[in-house]
Length: 471
Image (tube, rainbow, N blue to C red):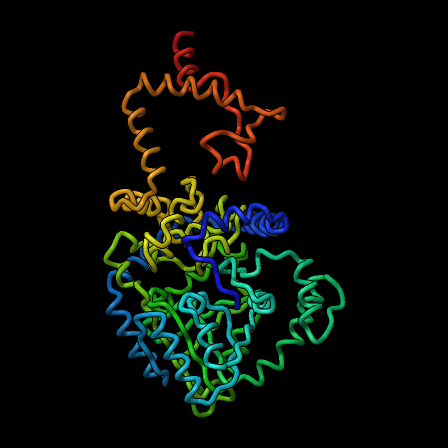
């Protein structure tokens, strides 16, 4: 798999993305469709507001008593016959998974989509160990064939057009596709993947939720590939973040209703599966072994910081689908597993503000992400807090610091501010092009390099306000 860009490369990657017209086509198609579906399905769900409040309360309660629920989950899962492992770091988590595979002499592993696996670098770890990795989710299969990284947490191949996928399948699949129709592409992928399910030595999955009272692993999919990945191989390995815990099986119901509506705009997903340990005596199918790797990776540190609310996240991707920045640069520009608003908070929390400081600044603070989040995560508030932290720790670039200081100087002096605004409006209008917009402007190349700037009105709001008072 090709190496991802670093979060530190965000500005350069975003600029490059703006020059890819096919990317913009793919993003517009997908995000527009997802936004429309979500709005429609929520309009038919009058309990949505109450469900959001309840879901946020359940998550807050679980996080407050996370040590209790983690211990309860481990005891219940082990009583079901599963083996529970704890991993503090990504390296420790991948070592546990690889060691299990090696002990079983595994040569191939099927994997059903898990962003936690991407987060800890599991694909690279399996490759380094000489274990064939087979991605079974259709979108992840596309990504694997293209030797790329996911660009979205729910639809990893969202950045690719249908035409590009058809060309990829023609080049990579043993059985040629019949046409570019979606049904033909799915049929081609099915014929490619089915033998891989049967021949896999290990099945690796993530989890959407962990029920503490029963030790159940809950997965949510739309293709049925999770069931084939986890039931056919003799060993099932789960890699999951500790924040996925919820108190009871019953409490998962509210999240299942919110997740499908927020992610894909459907009332309920096609497959919801509860795994309660390996195959028991008398069971006709299922794995002989089940291992659950609970991963921290700085999540407990987030509990003690101002980033605790981010651990409510149920990975629906609604914030990404409604982000105007993501809609023009896509997911790869963020240089991390999690793109968009959620990534702008999670990536600095998992790494550092020094390394990923551009991400919380890649936001207009329009608030759409916060508005659509099904568990009420205050995303824009947290990005604003990160910016304030950057300022305090002097991580903001010199040019940006001087610009902010200059603006603050003007803002504290209303008369000077209004005078400067007046001359700025006059100056900006001198750069107006024939179409009535500004295509290039000194000191604003970061904006006009990728988009036109609206020409300001001849009179400022304050001028119009005073004029209205005199009338």
